[in-house]
Image 1 (cartoon, chains in turn red, green):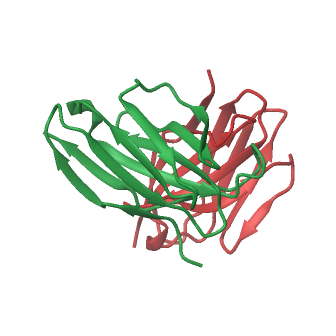
Image 2: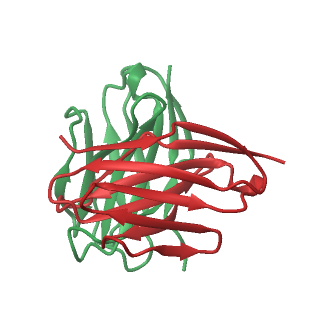
Amino acid sequence: EDKVVQSPLSLVVHEGDTVTLNCSYEVTNFRSLLWYKQEKKAPTFLFMLTSSGIEKKSGRLSSILDKKELFSILNITATQTGDSAVYLCAAGGTSYGKLTFGQGTILTVHP
Amino acid sequence: KAGVTQTPRYLIKTRGQQVTLSCSPISGHRSVSWYQQTPGQGLQFLFEYFSETQRNKGNFPGRFSGRQFSNSRSEMNVSTLELGDSALYLCASSLGLAAYQETQYFGPGTRLLVL
């Protein structure tokens, strides 16, 4: 059965800190790893990773995939209170339309 | 471009009733996936539709069903509601041209409460 595990489950930091969120996966015929941010509403898309070792970056957020070790990390530098959210990791294989999600990491950033 | 829309946003039902939720994908997207999100189980895949055909189904009982119309809008139906069906139901749309490596964009969800 496909499985995605995120760690830590929750994290409390202060503004300006750097955080690293972890995601490991076991998905049949793995093809893509996605990160979403959820703030009490629809998950909003952050990154999709399909190749190992290639970092994707958007502002203070970056992510990388390791297909050999079956994990991905999401880094957030210089955190702001607006980064407080649940960060979801999801993995997709060749199964139509199906993403397998992790439990999410609850990030709380204090001023 | 308008995002994914879902109606209604909130719903309260009683056990035994049935409910229909609606999802309109991003214009040009032909694939719609449905997910159930609960605090205990997280986001779980229900099913996916493309060109009015169900291509994939998750591990949910037959009380959960769906359909897709020619304009790619999709509905999901839950019959004989149980307390455990209380959840946030999310739909996501994508182009649907490949089985993988496509980003799914989520709607705001329908929050269903079963009393």
